[in-house]
Amino acid sequence: MKQTYIREISKYVGQEVVIKGWLYNIRYSGKLMFPQIRDGSGIIQGVVFKKAVSETVWKGFESLTQESSIIVKGKPREDSRAPGGFELDISDLEIVQIAEPYPITPKEHGVEFLMDHRHLWIRSKRQHAILRIRAEVIRAIRDFFDENDFVLCDTPIFTPAACEGTTTLFECNYFDDAKAYLTQSGQLYNEATAMAFGKVYCFGPTFRAEKSKTRRHLTEFWMVEPEIAYATLDDIMELAENFITHIVTRVLERRSEELRVLERDTSKLEKIVPPFPRLQYDDAARMLKEAGLAFEYGSDFGSPDETFLSSQYDKPVMIHRYPAQVKAFYMEVDPERPDLALCVDVLAPEGYGEIIGGGQRMASLEMLRKRIAEHNLPESAFDWYLDLRKYGSVPHAGFGMGVERCVAWLCGIEHVRETIPFPRMLYRLRP
Ligand code: 4AD
Ligand code: MG
Image (cartoon, rainbow, N blue to C red; front, side, top):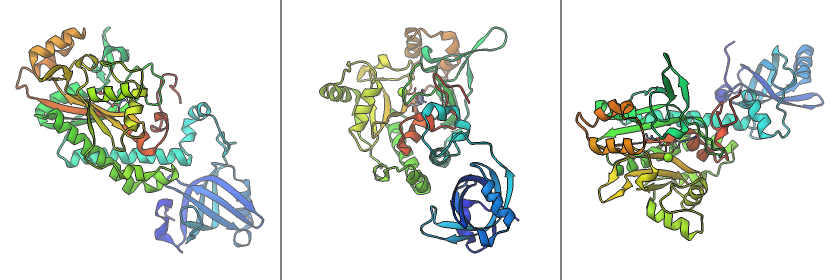
């Protein structure tokens, strides 16, 4: 018989189905047993009635341990009291493997223990919900750009030079004594493809040798980066607003069950509609001062600053025009205030902090050369990048969004480590 997935069980009420999965949990009650079975698509509660099954099946269920792999036959029935709304009247059991004593039991475990067992932890309800939301966010991202005529142009992971400052580069040996660095951002290459295709995006893993041990930092994370020729800072702020709204709407529509498992307050997400508040760096700095935070004008915002600012609004806030000196070398300057960069950081509400960083790129060859020198970057590594300013240079802009930070916000969870199947952090390279 063909396998039926639990997610589709409502279509099979009263019909015999086969479910292939694992034992999540089991309760005994005299002549009845209530095994909870998961199959990756969902969890269903089964009912085994001693009189309705053979002796072998009954004994089989008695022998099951948590996470034993099993194939069961039964008929689903609607039951409003059951988690998920359906129960399965079980008639047959095939044991695929009796699992060894499972390390993750329903009791409380410490986070380090769970992280060491991440390969198993991802089977539990909460992790399952978060990772399904992640998958939905990724799908929504791709749909948004594909449907709005952006061309996907993947950028390399091995790169010869820094994009986001030299302090967070992962270096590796490339052939013949050459050094390569794992990409921090696809942006520089995006600028080249944008000059070829107009509207582009890249989407892939990026790396930062961040020594930060915060709830927002991974050393390997996924970033999606759109880039548009002839676009200005204002254009990409509008894009960011529509983009975030699209993702939130999609997750609310399609992942309501997962949000429920996470006990997410969805009324907060329902408020995410354009326009988003826009705030100049100068005004944000003033707010921090007035709130008494130890922040110095002219520096970049630290995590506590971001947490404060993003708690002040019930929508993402777009902070623009930071002092050029704290931002990357490629930022265009504000013609009215050359000390400011035409850049934007989007901070998610509820204290989540920065989820998007981007802006307008420097279009002038001469100015860009100066910047590369000021940042002590080797001009030879950027010769191809400078070419983009020689052959039909135009104003252009784009941004990058970190998937994990976006997912952490949407899920309403504390730490980004749970938003990726196998997180890589300062002190975590396994499993
Ligand atoms: O602000 P960032 O560094 O911007 C760039 O890399 C630009 N080149 C992007 C562009 O304009 N095309 O990083 C962008 C986003 C951040 O807002 C954050 O969401 C995420 O990437 N991010 C991280 N996520 C997890 N762990 C880290 N260590 C991250 N660093 C940045
Ligand atoms: Mg940033």
